[in-house]
Length: 552
Image (tube, rainbow, N blue to C red; front, side):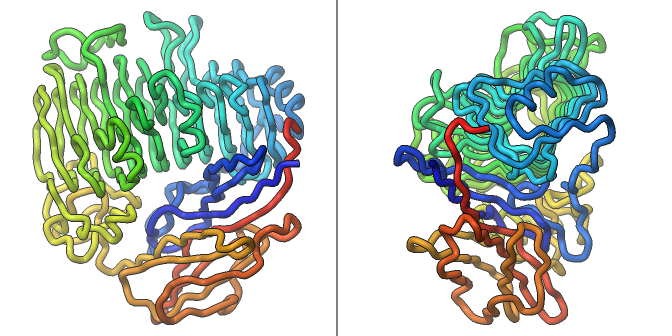
């Protein structure tokens, strides 16, 4: 009998309240501890609604319409996928599904696969490093939502065109991918000289990560990465948390990487944390790419690895000492290599130690715009042509609300960045979806600081001693009081003043004896009180339950 202990955790300071949370799981099996992250709700860890009305960028996905099939076992799941017809909605009941070699190949268009409850953490499809690819998509208009996928030997999600046609309209939404053996989400045509392609997909509001435990399973000189796409057109990668893609030896691919002739990629409002390389457009100077009839880069000579595309309003951050000590360290935040027509706009790249480059461009066919980015270190010219405007280099970590911890919202003292630039026409909001400008001019970087905005800290949860839960947070703004609330479900409604009220440092609270009882799980929310304003934290929690190895 394996005991699974889960403790919810958070990732960064938020602007006001939302029902998101993350969960740290520890599987205790054969005396080995395995740490992974799971998320409750559709929003990436640490993102929340702003007080006063910033948009909800990751609402719960609307109920799917079509023929509904509910499955409760691996065999039922496999049968539902294999026998799906267009319009089917496959709802997976809560539980851990040990696939152990079974893979799900969706070759019928207009099929949806999602959890029945809508809670990402409630359904785990576990490849146990036996299943090569958990989900293969070779049909158009397929939706994968509200699931956790973990431990595929190769790619947990693989999207491919076929010799018979393009594959378009893929939606990956509120999915947690943990510890892939290779790239977490792979996108490519059926052959390098293909005539049909995997185009116009969306990956949104998801959490993609490689943990320390999963890193030990990476092979082939660190052949891993977050999202990796070849010859793909028109993809949108937005509002995700992507983290941990690096190896002690060897260089991981990027958190987000589009190349081999990919085009018009949009990468926006993502948090990329502790990856060896953050976002990459292009890489190679030769190879088999993709030709376009409209010749999008007529001035280029020879092979181009990425055409067009926009990288905007992303937070890219590194503070992991083990990453810095690895063979390649923090290599780059944004890399534009043999990329023609790409634009890097209003991104924030920060690290507690120096990278090789915060933003770099390379090779003769590279022709890019790098505008209004805020970085703690350097912009590096490695060849090609870059139009530079409004960028700030070598900025201190004090420019951010919590520069050492990864909250890259601008602090009040970031005068070099606040109200300093005009945003390009294709940048109308910021990392949180708030409109630009909020002041006399736009701010440099991914955050548009709102001087009237109250910030609520991230709540960090941890095990203390054998059975106690500790909540802790830090904040650089004055608050009158904090109220700690606890419930038995992730989405409980806080009542009254809660279990405890804190009005002085230290900002921490201990719930004694909360761990270890599989029949009694706990979820927490902290509310800050400031005059008439009440703003809530993200939700965190702990739960305990048992797993039978190999069970369905």
